[in-house]
Length: 297
Image (cartoon, rainbow, N blue to C red):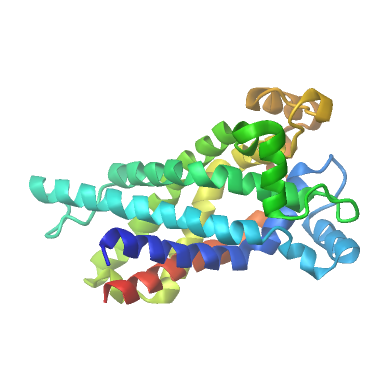
């Protein structure tokens, strides 16, 4: 098995762990981001309303889409990240920097690797998250879509590929910005422990991988949350003026939300995101690192 395939498989393990742990929190986040001002008093009010009106299974509504799609997305993320790290490692060895094996990458190298991983991931995550958000926010009593495959079929037939990729420019901005910070923070924390203790990467305590992943997750959301809110608004908006389209573009969305709801709208739903982040991102890196150790042993 090639290194690239090993990285993709390990990334898939991380993606599945992320979805299973983070999905209930994500449902609450999306509902709060896309609801009208004053709909919910806070995170607990939103979660309680979902539980009361739709039942506990509602917290995993639309899970099939991210379970399949996010598994692929995270697989691509880590595949591209590790490939970029190998390229930079080879460059470091040729220049005699980055330690004896060239693997101690600089901050700029890690940011570039993370941005590349985010952009590659965004090609898949855009439509995957679009479908997931449509399913998460549709009415339980009168749903438009029967499931993810029906949603893809309906949207593609009515609005084409462009319909599936609604909000894609915002998605790519979010992924590039966020994952540059995400992988920079995680890899630097890993490097620090390896240097201080004189150990290999596969000797790091798995719980430290969880902690570093949680920290990286907070770095990601600190950078991208307002962008993510705009993405959610764009991906729940109508496709045309005749189907209830509110926003002509991402810029128009920012302007209208700012004018009608104020700056607080750009952080609505942040609570469940901050609670979800350490668990979901810790699980992601734990899944990836443990799978990598098995595959590379």
